[in-house]
Amino acid sequence: MRVTFEQSYNQKMAMEVSLPVFNDTLKMLDGKDVMIEGFYIPVDETGDDKIVIVSAFPFSQCFFCGKAGVESIVDVLSPKKLPTLKVDTKIKFKGRLKLNRDNFDYLIYVLEEAFMVE
Image 1 (cartoon, rainbow, N blue to C red):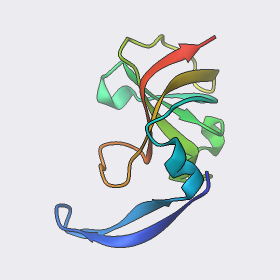
Image 2 (image 1 turned 90 degrees about the horizontal axis):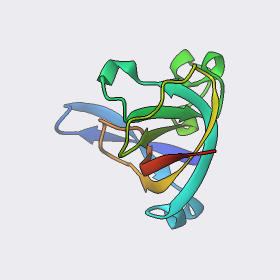
Image 3 (image 1 turned 45 degrees about the vertical axis):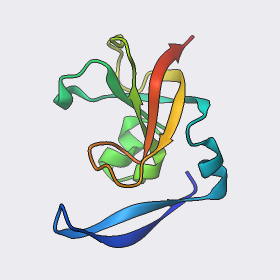
Image 4 (image 1 turned 60 degrees about the horizontal axis):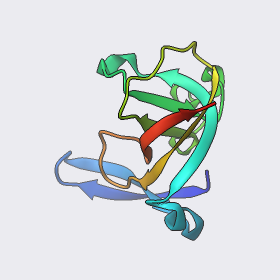
């Protein structure tokens, strides 16, 4: 979760945005297979059952409730439909980490080709 942010004007959005500045340790993991563990947060709004969010904190303390930053959550993209789980279920995923600096359709951390680990 060690990331800082810098302000930059985004032409497409016509506004100032916060862009992540990843440290060297995170940059070394970019594109590599990693395993993450955290709390399940569904993304029902997208209608896509192959995307979930994993949070370092339970829902009551997560980014969406204002208790943590965007650096504490990961977009998990699976090639297969993911099971329906209860919010705050502790889960593990393995996949390829992508550091996302400027695609505002996704979070700053994206786990691609991810699968659940028992």
